[in-house]
Image (cartoon, rainbow, N blue to C red; front, side, top):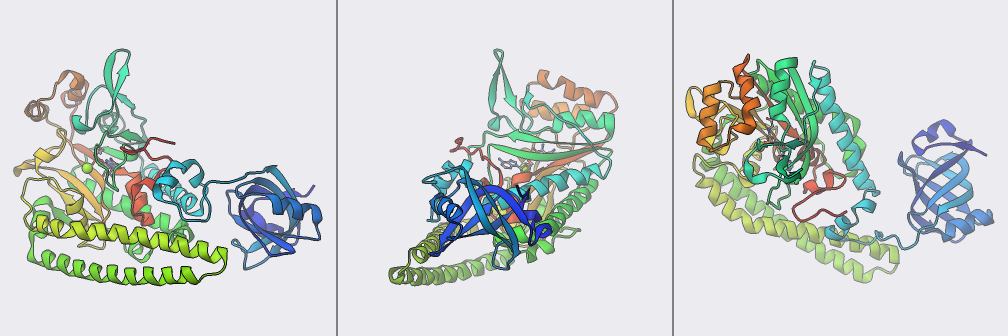
Amino acid sequence: MTEQACISDLKHHVDAPVTLRGWLQGKRSGGKVVFMLLRDGTGVCQCVVEAKDAEAFEVASSLGQESSLYVSGTVREDARSPGGFEIAAGSVRAIQSSEDYPISRKAHGTDFLMGHRHLWLRSERQSGILRIRHTVIREARRFFDNRGFTLIDTPILSPGAAEGAGTLFPVDYFGEEVYLAQTGQLYLESACQALGKVYCFGPTFRAEKSKTRRHLTEFWMIEPEIAFAELPDLCELAESFVEHIVQSTLAAHEGDLKALGRDIAPLEKIKAPFPRLTYSEAVELLRSEEVHLRLLGELEEDKGRLGSWIGQLQELEKKLSEAKKEWQRENITREIHDLRDEIRTLEEDLGNRPDHIRDAREFEWGKDFGGDEETILCGQFDRPVIVTRYPREVKAFYMKADKDDRRVVLNLDVLAPEGYGEIIGGSQREDDLHALIARMDEEGMEKAPYEWYLDLRRYGSVPHGGFGLGIERTVAWICGLKHIRETIPFPRLMSRIYP
Ligand code: 4AD
Ligand code: MG
């Protein structure tokens, strides 16, 4: 019996016999030899089986895509193998032989892939994204762990709303209606009076009736909360936090990011300090002549791009009609499929863009920024932009009013560049009992479920605040993904709960 090894470790076994175990990602036959691509979760390795090893050759020839198997053989250095090593395989044993794996090399539509998410995770692209997600979470936690924050696990079943009654998921709790947590924040505010600096990290739920590329109904959020912190402290913390996550993820995953086709130059620029705007300044910018002209220019550029993509598509279709070999046809079909997807997205976007440009020009002070405004605003900067002091009407009841302009609150939103928009939302909290009660009355909120929360203002209230960073939006931005659905293993969307 040869030594059991994993693919990422093969460099320590050169010229030695090993046994690998994993899944058959793909296979190519060349007459007297079968080239198998074996995946074991640590990497992918080419295993070469020659016809002279009759038994191994027969097994290798018969196995279908995604069969599970053992391969034994000698490790050879080979630049053509994905990890730089290949196995000259003398023995191939099936664990389970699989037939008709539904995800083939052919092109599949997103809906099909989402419906087969339990299998789709095995693709290199999806597992690369999940590895990056893991690092984003580890680094986000490490950032707070290294700064003296204590992790607090806040409840998922909660008696009241925190972020607006419109997005609550009700749960029947022994006959009483309670809700899935929209945030851990209110409980963190309690814990920060005990421990000073705290954070929570957990799943949060929003019954958002929006089918955008930025919304999940179940997403993960990391939220710090700090006693004796005011708005400027929160802005500084948020920018070093984002810088840390981006730079450490970039350092750990250059390979994965490049494999995703992510241009990493824009990520290298993500260094504090970030530009800051008040909401009012952001509104002025949206309405400005300068931005208006820039948006019109970009629209023309993108129309040009659409034209050249359509040209490329025609060339590919011609190539397809001339291709002789099945594998060539598969590759070209896939390229055509991807390009058609891109063209469809761009066409849709170009169709809506003139309206967005006009809406920005006519944007009225007092309205909340939607995804379209955020996209325009963050498109003006190459680093994330911190927008503060939104009108109180569009923000949550717990935000502290600005004493110099009571129309606005001391909040911050961090908008990621390249069109990604809000990744962080937070604020200084209303720490004055009477001001908080007045605001709750204004909103028509029932106070009984919040008596405990009001106690925090009755017993040793201090200025404090925090924010929440959405893990999935951050991963989408770092990976350069068009849609948030690929950033979480099993996305929960308004229109999807299976698998
Ligand atoms: O701005 P939000 O709603 O803020 C809060 O929940 C505060 N209680 C946080 C705090 O101050 N402790 O959400 C924070 C972040 C957003 O910036 C976004 O990144 C993410 O959570 N987020 C969503 N991500 C995916 N799908 C959704 N439906 C999201 N809603 C918010
Ligand atoms: Mg928000």
